[in-house]
Image 1 (cartoon, rainbow, N blue to C red):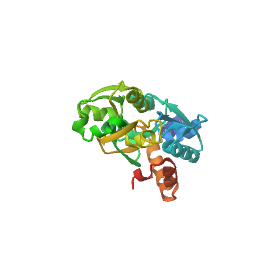
Image 2 (image 1 turned 135 degrees about the horizontal axis):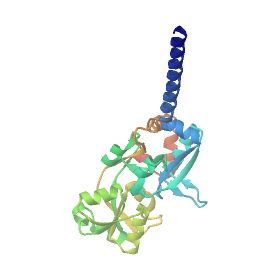
Image 3 (image 1 turned 180 degrees about the vertical axis):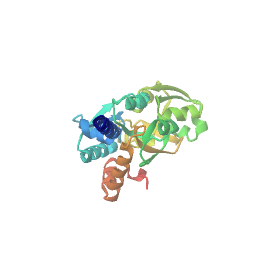
Image 4 (image 1 turned 30 degrees about the horizontal axis):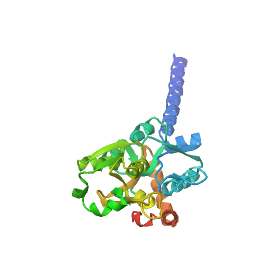
Length: 263
């Protein structure tokens, strides 16, 4: 009987050890940071959005967000891969682990806050109306633009602003495409991020015949990670480090967004 009791005790101890080991594995696997390190890559979900994420003449993704993401990837010791996504599906892409992070001048909204683990805001922004430059003087207030037909990016803060103001609009794939719509005359106006307008609209840009006029909102940019992810806190620490040593200011000045940095 004594030998049987000892055997039962030993068996129970072994079972406890196995369960404890499984618990540790599950705890480790719950860490997005460790998951990313383990697979050796940080997959960044983006759209073509200057000055945040866009391609240079050699086809390399550059921009304020792109450069910042690469620095974080270096500190994680992993390769950074940029994947263009349908902005309307960004939450699904995160949850499916098709991407690890949404880092693309993403406006903090109630939907984003409830569906993602978000970093602290790092850039200020606004939704602004873009029209043909020769018509810009006609549109100085929200009331002035209410009769226009807008192009907006599906699932964006621009679409939310259009809905909030009761504007007539068509939702399309990207902010860049909304500018093409206005230039072609198929839409009267578009609603895009003011930081994008600063880089892509007006004299000396690709759309020198367009101009932004009325700001509809005041917003902040955040980086989005999977709900419950520890990656958001990791990126917060990284951004603080780059802020303290001046790196983030240098990158911001390169892309002309230094005035938008959250102080």
